[in-house]
Image (cartoon, rainbow, N blue to C red; front, side, top):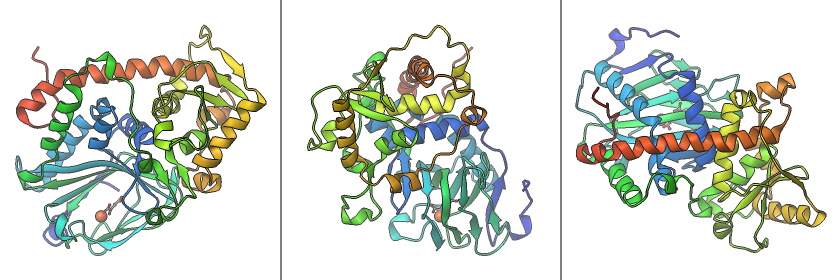
Length: 400
Ligand SMILES: O=C(O)CCC(=O)C(=O)O
Ligand SMILES: [Fe+2]
């Protein structure tokens, strides 16, 4: 689909479609952030990552990649709808829909508490037919009638009933979007709240001490088919994401299956694959998840130049394996459900059979992840004083 001139119908159905507004790198970077940060979402089989959640879990640096994208989207939206300098971002979030998720006909301002939403922007971060099936977007009236999600494409529309839309049920895979709502009302500006949260979280931290993520309360990561009923059958999202990629978790400290899950999530862990344990301690499950997802994101780049990487791997005892299985039976007690929700698609490297040592890749990823978060962290510490002055998140340009 190309950028089409919808001028004749613009009053009836004010909307615009932009192909390739986000680069492939931007899409995969946001996918990485979501896969190591998401919590259970607001609808069945939906997961979300909000900017305030990133701050609350000591991962504020992951806000940096959103900044230029938000600015570009706001510029395009204001230009197209001729409301330059009039809009505020009310919400920014990464949202993934797994098998079974769908939404019927609705407008995005259809509740009294959503009336401040004036414009919707949906950025597709992955692709129909490749990453998931189902999940087509339809407008009830007008053109384009259907949008087939493809990574990088963006649709913008007014949030009112001139743009009633729906999304078909996802039948397989994970459909990922970056969703934003914009408001004309300055009191709904999420930046004011985000700057205040960032100030509280970052003010007393130095750059190096704030690299490690801190998990939120464990119920935010507990997925069950019937979310409302506090179902015991389901899984912890972090455990499940690692398990789907072929990894398990081992607690070096004394822990039992009866331990409180929120406490467990704060404990140091080792990464396990099959009967092998990597002799490197991670601060907690979120830390290890960030490294493993970073490895998945950068897989091919990390495979080069790894011959001199030293990694110590230990063979697990039967007792240790039993301990891992015991915890899995609590935290991942519905493995089939986890596989249906986070189905894994083989990476290019595995398809080509060229992945020669998984552990060396992971060890390379530990150092590369640290460089990456340190770089983002420096940027956020540099920009925050400017953001505080403007009460707005923006790309601070250094004068030459
Ligand atoms: O993901 C999409 O394509 C649209 C989602 C949607 O309609 C909503 O969240 O209100
Ligand atoms: Fe919607």
